[in-house]
Length: 125
Image (cartoon, rainbow, N blue to C red):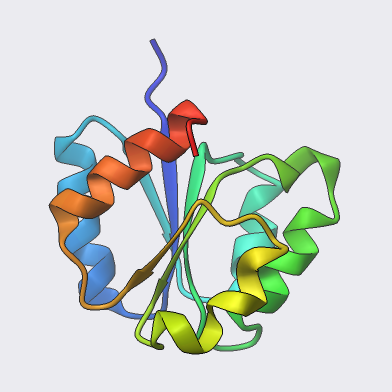
């Protein structure tokens, strides 16, 4: 059985290192890119099963990335979990129409994140 791919789009290298260890320990294939334009390029190479997306990124913010991604039938169905240091109540409304699976504020509990990843990949949310 193929391992499910989780793509992290975040410019915080420490978060990426920590999540790489946790995701791989859970049996996921982990990919990481540090900015939005790079993510759009990666999507053309390898389609992830789920994307963890930060909002504040160099070159292209998370909201713009998500809007671009949702325009394509090829990527529209990929579950997205927003990971952000911005308060949920201040920016959550921006993402309602983009059908994100979850919005998780940083710092986050990795056990909670892993549970939400499983639910999102199963399509129950």
